[in-house]
Image (cartoon, rainbow, N blue to C red; front, side):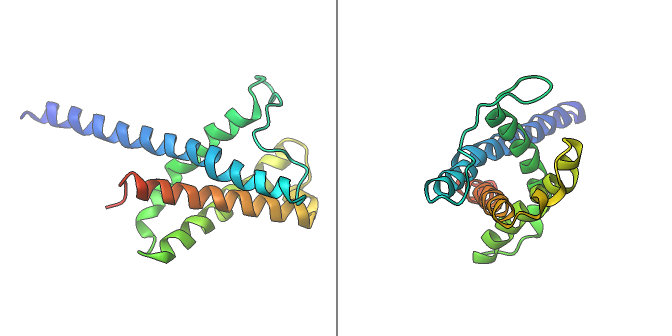
Amino acid sequence: MSATSAAAGGGRLFRHNIVSLFLIGASSVLLFQMGALAILFAVGQTQAAPFPYMATKPFGIPQIWSFCFWGGVWALVFGLVEKYFPQGLLYYVCAFLFGVAGPVLVLWFVVFPLKGLPMAAGLNAGRMLTQIIIHGCYGLGVGILLQVVGRRS
């Protein structure tokens, strides 16, 4: 096998892993994050309904698809740091904490100010708790789905 064909094969394998990670992240949004939001909505913890279809600005894409896109992007970051997670039960704790640490902090201190919203959900404890739970469940979902599809060696 020539170096060129080996490199091409490696490129296909790498791209497959990126696509897989992205799809796992998007799936985790739909299954775990929106599932957690549905439960919180059902028990009255939040007024935010799951699977929102309100248009985003400036492109008018439904929010749920925007969430799935960013969930896929965050799964790529997860794929970079996951190798440092411990084995066993602590792996899932780290996956949950990843969802809390990365996406929530960026949401609170980057996305909200860019959208003209108060940082850290305006320090509204209920909204903050909801965001921590649903994003933690997202991270946990990515970890579980990676384990299910055999991504982790």
